[in-house]
Every structure is written in structure tokens, then in C-alpha cells.
Length: 156
Length: 294
Image (cartoon, rainbow over all chains, first blue to last red; front, side):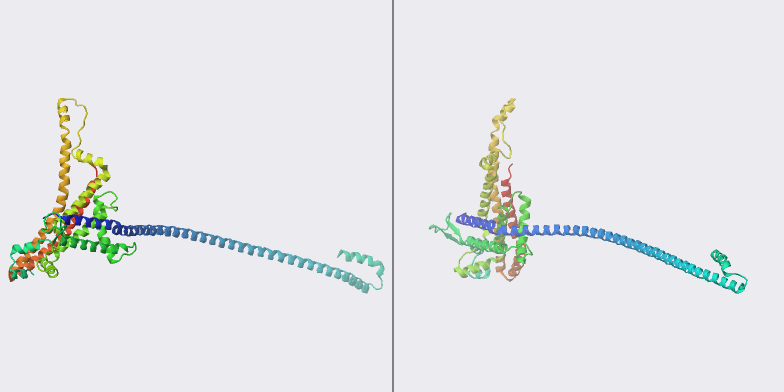
């Protein structure tokens, strides 16, 4: 158990080993481990962030979908209303048109009737005159009684 | 191997002595291999080679350390790193990465591999030494069973301890602590009674008590630090030799020696790792105590 130069030599070796570890061994290991720890922490944070973002997006999409559905039904409702309106309008128009046609037909009929009446009237008067002439050929003066007959024809 | 020695009619004392003699070389014309100017070549060479090998191996892994998926070698080194870092973190509450944690890693790995030399069969080492260096070449394989190694480590830690104490508290603060803790410093207020006056006169004794206490602490720390490791490793080596001698005695002795040698070697795995761990922990404790002021 004698203390000698070996002690100094060992102490120097020890100092060099410690210096080497402090300078070259520890820092890269520490750096790698701390970087990995940070990466893992960041990854976990990003994952939870993504999860919450997904939830928000799902909620948003649901809301949008509901809005779209509502709008679609609104549009359908409007379209139906408009269709009914158009049908009603068309019905109205058709009725009007029909009435108009009917009225013009009636007017035409009236006109024809009047024309026929006029014709008939003229024919009746001339027929009456001719009949009367035939009956009364001898005794009745056509000229004297034509005024009276014209009056009669006007009363028809 | 022990039988070889028996053939040469080596007495048990000579056998033990042969295994416990250092390969000492004189320096500066020292020929009697006594006194300070002697170098234990076996201790020095073994420890330096082991220290370089283990730290370079770790360095080779650390150099390419990446934050991504680690290789198996890196995972192993990180396991050691994490183990040391956790231990230091629990004891030292400063910036451990600057010095104390890497120093603890060095101490642990180096002492561990030096202790692990104990697993080499003592007679194989002696046989290899006599093959290479001729007969009667001594070579002790376990550097930590040389008190020079353990004292070198303990005294280095001791110097670091004082260095950090002065660095943290300042030279004045350190000297103040040596004289004024742990028992406190006297107060020099005007006494109000006779008892107070006696107390005031006696109070400088507190400086003496504090100083004596601190000196005992400063002396006992490196002693207990180094001798614990030395004692364990030296005793382990001696027991291996005794088992070797038993094995050389007869066929029955050889069988018993084989069983006992295996048993002791297995138990020694625990001692080797445990002593390296204790030495590392005490290093960390001493250095962190130096950072704390009383």
C-alpha cells in the first residue's frame, strides 16, 4: 500500500477522461435526447390539436349541411308556390281567353241573328206584301197600302 | 495455472505475494522501487486502456446520436445516460449538464470497467504476463485494487469539491463557512449579565470547534471515498486467490474451488457494479454538497 507516482498519473488520466466526456460525449447525447423529447411532445400536441380541429370541422360541416338542407327545402317550397301560381295564372288566362272568345262568338252570333232578322224582316214584309198582293190583287191598291205594311214590318 | 506454480514448489505465501505485487518501474533513477518515484505500469496501463476504450466506444455512439429512431447501440448508451442523469438530477439541483453529470458518467463507466477486470481469472493474467514478459513478471489486472487509483480519483474529486465550494461561495465565503458552520458564529453584542460576559469570552472557541469539525469532514471524505472501493476490490481479488489455492490443492479441492469460484464470481458481479455505483454517487453527493451553503 505505497502511494507513489501512479497516483498522479491516474489523476491526470482521470482529468483527461472527464474533460473528454464533458466536451465530446455528453453534449451530443443530451442534445439528441432533448431534441427527441421535444419532438415527441410537439407530436403529441399536434395530434391533440388535430383531433380538436377535426371535431370543430365535423360540427361545422353538420351546420353547413343543415343550412343547405333548409335552403333546399325553402327553394323547393318557393318553386312549388311559383308552380301553383303559374298554373293559377294559366287557368285565369285560359278562362279569360275562353270568355273573350265566347263573347266574340256571341257578338258574332247576335250580328248574324240581326242580319238574318233584317233579311227575314225584309223577306217577311215582301212576302206579306206578295201574299197580300195575291189575295187582294184586285181590290187593294198596292200603293195605298204599302205604307201601312212598312209600318207593320217595322213593328216586327 | 495454479498447479504450475505448485510444480515450482511455490508456497502459498509466495503465490499470494506474486499475485499482489505490482509491475512497478522506477522513475528518475529510482531502482529500489520504493518511495514516490515509482510507477505501477500494470495499474496505469490497464486503467488508461480501459478508460480510453470505454469512453471512445461511448463517444463513437454519441458522435452519431440522432433524435429520430435510435440504433440499438445508441439506445444502450442512452440507457446508461438516462440512468446517470436521473441519479444526478435527484441529488444536484444546478446546471448538472455543465460538469457534474458528465463527470459522474465518466466515474461510473471507468470504475465499472476497472472493477470488471476482477472477472479475469487471476492465474490467467499472471500466466499471460509471464508468457509475454518472461517468468516472474508481475501484472495485477484490477486497477481499483491499487490504492493509488482510488486515491487519485478521490483526491481529484476532493480538489473539485474545494474548487466548486470556492467558485460558488467565493474564497471569503468558503473560509467563513469553515470557521462558522456547522455550529454557528459567536455574536459580539455587549453582554447584559455575568453569564453573558463569560459566554462572550468563551465564544471564540466556536471558531475552533467549527474548524475542527470541517477538517475532520475534509479528511474523512476522500479517505472513506477511496478506501471503500479499494477495500472491496482488494478483498475480492484476495478471495479469488484463496479459491485458486484451494483449487490447486487436490482433485476434490479443484472441484470445490470451481464451484466456489463460480459462486464468488457471480456474487462479485453485484459488488463490481455496486461499488462503481456507490463511488459515482458519492462523487455526485460531495460535489453537490460543495455547491450548497450552510
